[in-house]
Image 1: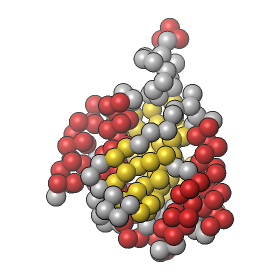
Image 2: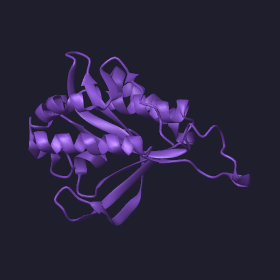
Image 3: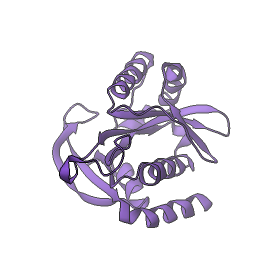
Length: 207
């Protein structure tokens, strides 16, 4: 089921529906320091970014993803991208959905990257807070999971700081940025944990 695009906005960041008009700004963003993306499949160069956005829009039309451009409110600059994907609508007992099928039961948050100038700022923390709040409080999700390359220590540390729980390693799970089958470190947050995770993320933003 396709979910209509929507905007999430906080004090520092706006997550707006990804569109081809973001290609130029995203090309500039990923060009700031490509060394940041050793373990992440981040598009570098105009053709790669164009293909990346087109692929995301195709997946959105198919109902499997909700992609965003990440916009820094301080200067209005597009400085990265993120998305919900692997949206799941579960079949509950009796063949009935737990609620309206306009809202998925679980998903993954990923394809997240930022320009070098946005690293170690409030941007990623607030973006995750916005996305998780929507997932658990608007959609009423049961779980949200996140994966990263087992070798990506920076990404794994960020997931742990936000309160996601480590579930284990999925072997040869996806194709890595260096074009080999990667082992993925799997993390998740479930609905019962969300209130505490939310308090912790809000505290990080205040700090």
